[in-house]
Image (tube, rainbow, N blue to C red; front, top):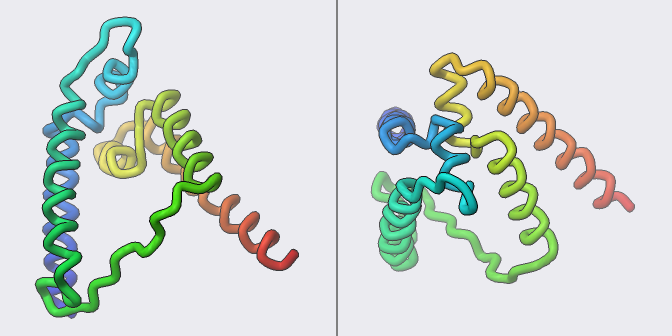
Length: 142
């Protein structure tokens, strides 16, 4: 348990540092990447490409395992369908990213760095998560 918590902390710390180094915590850089018709900044495409490449190989290894490297149970997602919920969720994520210049991970790092805009974004994100939870419970009981 103790080793697991240390590894979680180290992984989160490395992820946060990587987000800062890549510029993902700067909403201006992110919005520059999304501005295809203006002063487009393609540098974040390399960040995404690197993440996809690492993720691809990590999942190839994980699919062959039943335990994590620290001995815990390994649970991979089972869903493969592209349904309405996935598409709508992706669209909402994209709109939020385009309006704010933040996605959840960089927003948390930016908030910890003291950026007021990130605090507003995280508050709105948490409110949206709570709203989703309430709506999910309502539709489950109907």
